[in-house]
Image (cartoon, rainbow, N blue to C red):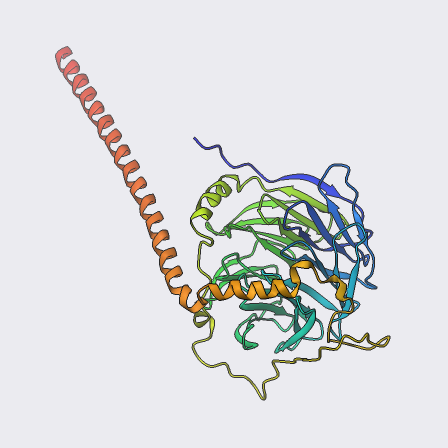
Length: 451
């Protein structure tokens, strides 16, 4: 008999920042943790005992977001100083800076293949940057207020963004168009992200709510009102079955998305919690907040599921195939008001350094940060690799059908087991009833004999 899952446990905490923690991210190998803070510093923590932490100095204002690249060879950070920096996560912490926006930058996000970086800003735009060529690609304009967060879908075909204009928008990265729009009349979303299969988005609301939409059918699937303060951040477990949320009410909450209910409330922080993130494998999660502390938790409750997940991952890569773009585009044309101002591109290849104070959106200021993985030969190889694979439009229908059939088979297995258990219970009940009737008959006969 499998043991019951355990509760999450606070494993350790890290102190080193002098002000509130704004963002946390695990390295892909799970051995390091990067944190960003109001104190203008980034810190890189090592999980080995007695290993020292590194402090990265460079930003001139609050650091709002930090993220490791998928290969773990770069760290991207965003700041209120209007810049984005790329760091090499080692003891020297060498970095390159680029003036990304004309207002504070609120978030950075690498695409899953590490080729692109999306940045969101209070200048109401989202910008996308090419990491291999180290240059600016295009801007997305449609929000009418500060953009708080922008995230790539797992397959990189979509970007989801949220803004203080009370809308969440989904963008097609191929034609740079806004293809879907979710709006809220009460609050705005502070943070938004795709689930691991890319079929749903979750939003953390200033109105204390957490909402999950299925982007294939444009439908609100779940609506949680479990916090008593604004929700600042959320993170999906890699299985897609759990969601952890961080709130200004000082708590972290863990939601079971399969059962649609709150399963844990964690109180480890003194004051608002601003950020939370699961590790890439889901066995750990970390949180940070106004108390300047970074807490590291062991998940535990997913132990049984992770073993099952590993077995199933041998069979296939995803539980659900990513949504086809035809699923996501609205059924009726979008009423785009006025002229389309979606794309801003630059084709300049010059790498001249800007004058002091000059705004530039051309290329990174330090080409030396290009990793060996980004060399032209690797790019050619990647292009060849990609050409070997069938196109998404060719693959998506068979994938969806096989996934659906597997899911049906699993459900049938569960039903078969349930029916057999019910049959056993019915047999036991019948046997007990027989015994009871026989005992009653004996008692009745005994009473008759006495009388």
